[in-house]
Image 1 (cartoon, rainbow, N blue to C red):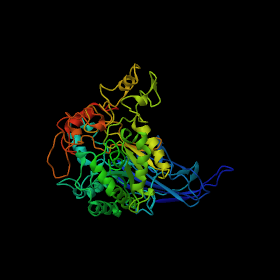
Image 2 (spheres, rainbow, N blue to C red):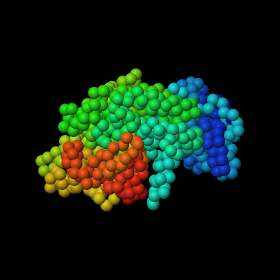
Image 3 (tube, one colour):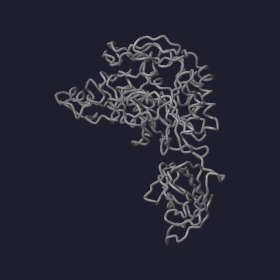
Image 4 (cartoon, one colour):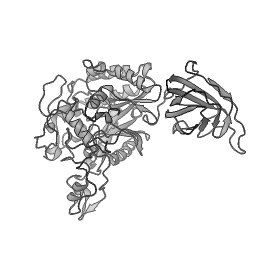
Length: 556
């Protein structure tokens, strides 16, 4: 139902105001309802807006989207968010909310736009046909931050495994990434859910509100050239299969108009592009397989093809994997990696505009924020950068790295509006081993080692790390330049097997997942720090999940 009115009593000297309001109860259930509201400015142009009303009954807003909603008693106000504040004469803004209700659910009797009354709004119920219902996002446009004012998909398969663990129900309602790590995952492996199954379930969970689905695009030819545990099904030269059998089918599903209302976040090919910088000739950590992938160009071609075809879908938000501070944070790697990312983002018909942002620390363990020391500290005449742990890196944690690397990416030509994601699924480092304050200032090493939250033996250790804990819960817009903290790696899924396990997924055995391994040049010949008895990468690892719960920070 719609109400049309002219604003009354405009303040002297103020812009002449006026509005029409379309308030609709789109769905209703026992004890609750979903409402869509559209306000049209019929007065002078305004740069921001606030719509106010009072509920006639016992309605209480529980969640809103496309506006910032506050309620005190029966009085409610909905203010614009960053992307929909400006209303020219005749233009509209739309938002919605879920609410609980006891008793009758009468439509509000009056509305005010920026303090000026609009009279005689109409009302109606869920059976009334909507006229011009709002879209999310507006056709052909993307929101600045897909996580803002939006729900995020909870994978029921992961949630069931988490809930089955002792204490797991405390986190089983958290959103995690859906990993499409082989061609078969698109349709679903065995009785598991395929991509369409996940998207259909996301529509059910969304219930009409803005909603994010997180997908991990992860099947490059010659995948993970420097880490055998995550090798994939496609050989180094099978770029054609990657394009036609993997990316094309995914793009076709995501482009289905049925899913146009979802905000689909894609994490594109983790642990790929940085290898072309750090693990190729003439680097001391050269891996022959990475030299092959640099020479044949199939990492660049594959990522470019994925960005181009997925980024062409209006409601897809591409985030490219950008390693982590313990990989890209050194001077030799920082700008070189940004240049490689731009090369991939402009390959195979793609442009930098098809990159919405980047993600760091995916499936890794780098601490979000180290509070007990900074990169600028000096102890006993030495910089923190000279400590064995920092080892001349310019960053000590993921958030400072992500914010700085964002600026570097903008500097090489990516759009100024790109945002960063940080995977906090396993970087909490809580529990009894978490330092309460700085280390002793006996030397720069005792200072850093005594105070660092990250308790790994070495920064280069990456597989099923002993002592790790759940990190910050998923959260939208937690810091400047950061679109969200996410759990892209589902906690409890293994990084790789502790010993060789025959399989048909192309996954090899990496000694970094063996707790008896004494290391290599990448971790300065330290012990691997891996948990024992781990299954194949991606398989459920109960012992790891229990350790993550125990060492969670913030604590559960």
